[in-house]
Image (cartoon, rainbow, N blue to C red; front, side):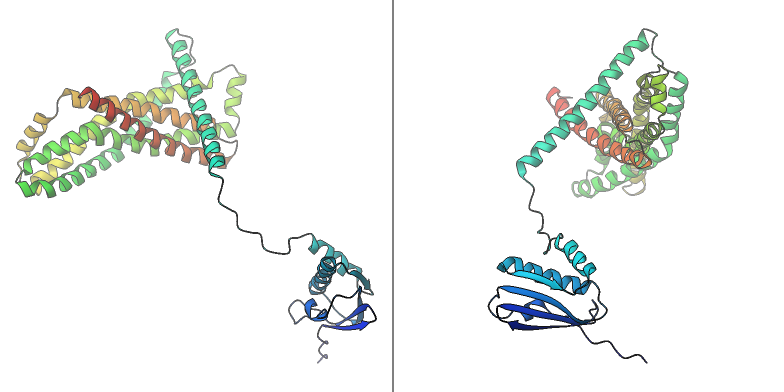
Length: 373
């Protein structure tokens, strides 16, 4: 077996006004190394000499020791001289000296005014982008009525099938389950007053005025809005939109308007379908759990719902369709030219659509309350 190498050592001796530190042995980062503070226990000398003395293998631990010696010498204004030490160790010590000697301090809280200003600028930029797209869509409608728009009904019908007929199963399932949930929750309270039959009123009005259009819109925002944004974002990454512009084809006429028109036309129909399934869910609960005859439940529902309630829900649904289409197309056209950009555009489209749906629904609630609808 080979003899073990001697451990790292640093022997300090004072020779007049000079402190001589003799470095020797094997310096390994995994072993025990001397500490520079142990060599300078007394008052600072006028000069320090760091000298190699039977130095064997070494690694970055020696460079760290040299760096500590340099930091101490600069702090106390003492001249430091290296004698016989490897030049590579000195260069490595120079590189280590350029790095911070302590951990970075944790970042402080952001400036409130700076964050508020940045958020305001971001919102203003988003509002300008949305307003610009709305303006381009208005001009596209003008070109359409003049017969000058590059609008293809074939594409619009294909999108209507995708966002309309293909969305019926998921919209119907969610609406039916929401109707069941609302009927159960309403029955818990109405049973205490012996007013079980008014579950039909609660479910009917809630579904027709709010939950039907809202559920259909949320489903389409996550299903169709994300698909629109991902499609346009992928086309942006593949430079297909640039190719259309080069050929003189307006992307708004050719890509955006068919999708917005499809959503605008399909959303009221999906809202009607959602209303029917939501009322059906309440009827199932009423006839199976509350012992309310189906005929009585249906008569009570018809007595509470009038044309104003139905038109209110359809108006909301049409507005939600426009907002979903605008948000999805805006995020798709703003997407970065990469696959990751298309994914982020789809996520942003869902978030933006959902936010605008909730905001517009609250505005409608206030306006309808003022008008007494």
